[in-house]
Length: 303
Image (cartoon, rainbow, N blue to C red; front, side, top):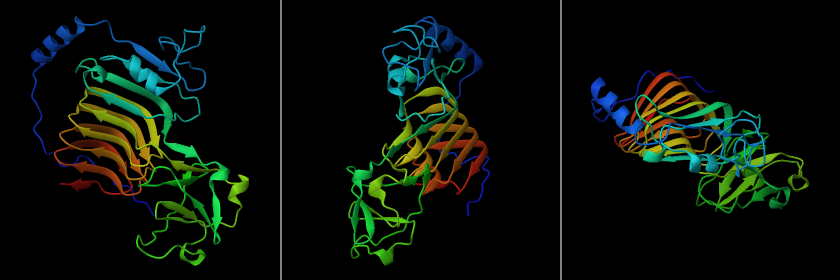
């Protein structure tokens, strides 16, 4: 049974740089004069085309309209731009990676990602032909080893822990409807014939839904990040003034949000629920300041 853990703030590890209003005003004037005005890049995973420039939200012609993938949007984006996702009802399958000055903003004009309630998913369907029946259990051998997450009809299936150095799993060792990992393979117990395609099964494939590194003055809002092998959102270092607003990170293989290095993240109406190991993981000198947070596990502080 999950419990909600409202959190007002996590432990602060590092000093906040102190800029006065005059400093920010001068900085904004200098940066604003050094490049073209901030732009909005529209993304639509149903009607978009990556041949487009993403300058308009509606398809107009062959090369005028939204882009289709997050990779294309990130490649087109510059400082203080906005990436605007259409909520088409279909999850976005690619991850989002923001790095350095190009994907940063300034205090008065942040780099923004507006999700409009869209879902960023790392789940990939498992073809029926990939399953093998072995001694009453169904066996799957993913190409990528390490952490696994098995889903059915868009929800994680319960996992049964198998001894790493124990004997091969048997029908009796795994409860019905559960799955376990042994020697790099998934073993799933069900009476259904998976090789007929009767079940809608998927596995988490990508590592992290959103990766932030060395970015400043970034705002991500109204987005759902789910079903990634490791983390929903990871900030491994050098992030400053990053704000997550109305963001949900759920059902990921390790943590909903990881703040590492010297990164500083602020969450406003942040939901980190049903992630397998951690809701919020803070490592090294990371800082997380959360207001109106919903957690299914208390935050984890790691040296």
